[in-house]
Length: 330
Ligand code: ADP
Ligand code: MG
Image (cartoon, rainbow, N blue to C red):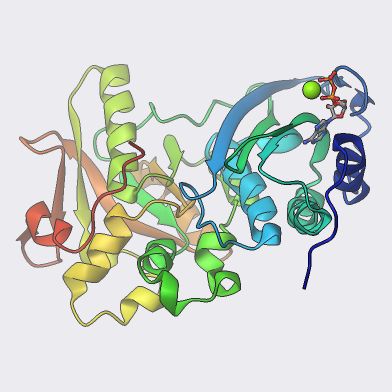
């Protein structure tokens, strides 16, 4: 089927906005002018973050337009959630090799669907030609005054380590692209964004990060930031037998392979956080509402920052990395 004809930049922007439904009362000048103007509600601070997705790097090139739109926003909301912020406004930079109406409509629907669910308003952006489809989203969210920021730097010795959702699903799909039709890659295409969980964690967690580069790497970021903040070398001990494995990787015959995917696969967009033991009851109660699993402990740093055990004995990292190449951007 031939795709619909290309559009001018302006009708394309109109088409994009036609799908957006959220109108926030704090947006004084919406998209369409040289800049948008927002008036943040009193008593709040603003969290700001940017994430770029490049075709062939952050999603397979045959990913459906709807999924690209959804994912571009979801990974940005996930950053807000990891800070305990409630997403409010986004701007969108689209650099595209072609501007077919079919792509724009699918993209806008996926983007608008998630924006609508979260009450997020698109307040502007930029649209340009590029040889590779590249999407940059700038997101802003709100944190009430008086709420301590949920950062990577708050972990303390003895904290429990938790992760939300299930791990390894996106990694499994990426490793088996041929086995999943592009629209069937649900974990990869439609990551969770965990807004409500992030807000609940404001009063419970000491540190938090969203898992984008692989669980171990991201726990490493928490340890690094927290060690300098408390001036004490922190490490982590992870119980592999506690990891919440995605249904697909539970089927692996070799548990090492499943654990390797859960530990190293990027693109998971679950929240990893630490909390003191005194919050266990509250977190157990929260686990009635959200999938959250206690997977380890913050310990004094050993020769290796992160030690692993399978519930019985220590597990060597080299035993696991045979199964998957840890994710690296460059
Ligand atoms: P300028 O030349 O001032 O940069 P543009 O022609 O790039 O303006 O954009 C016109 C209006 O359309 C601006 O308000 C801008 O925010 C909005 N816009 C452009 N591209 C996008 C996009 N991809 N998503 C949302 N809004 C967009
Ligand atoms: Mg512009």
